Length: 131
Image 1 (tube, rainbow, N blue to C red):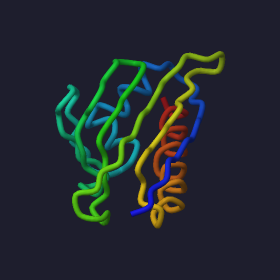
Image 2: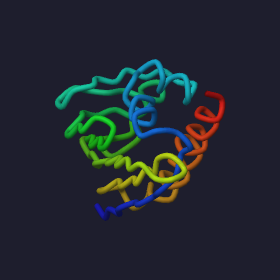
Image 3: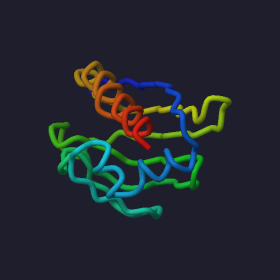
Image 4: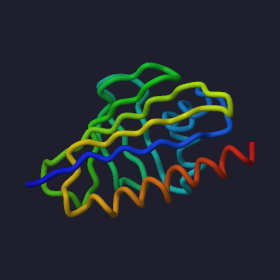
């Protein structure tokens, strides 16, 4: 299977700690997405987000700086996982999130690229604007 790698960057007008907590706290994640989330907070813990559509395992955690997860959607080829990495950096306007997702099945690349923008970055911007 051919795969691709996705890179996206976005700036949020809030502190890195807030971005990290919103991605890693089950209740906050559910609040910004509007969908059920269960997220373990330690390396080796599992997660399930978007009403169990995306699942995986935490691979590396550096609080307020970096999250790396083994990640897949329920409609993906059997037993195929990608890796997602969220890197957080303090910038003048708040926090820059640099996102990388590797091993995306080529046929799903465009849908995922749009999905991260629409279902994560835009929703997070609205969530932080209300705080």
